Image (cartoon, rainbow, N blue to C red; front, side, top):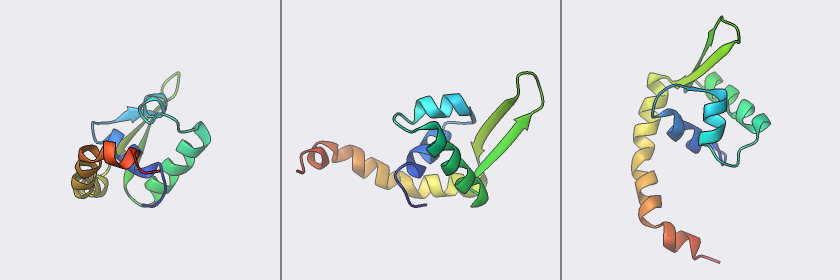
Length: 93
C-alpha cells in the first residue's frame, strides 16, 4: 500500500464504483499511466475489483473489494488526522 497515489485512489473508491475517467478526475494530478499501474497493483493485491461491461462503448468500473473496504476503514483515522492538521503540515518548510 505504498506510494503517493494508492491512498487517494482507495479513498475515492470508498464512495462507490467509478469508471476510469471519473476516478482520474477524482484523483487530481495523477497521470493516466500512473493510475493504470496503481489500479493493476491494487487489483493484484485484492483491494480493487475491475468489472468489464461488454457494451459499446466498453464500460469498465472499479470498486473496492471487502478487503479494500476494510483497509479504507483502517486508514480513516489517519485521513482525519491529516485534515485536522493540514495547515500545520503545509506550513512545514
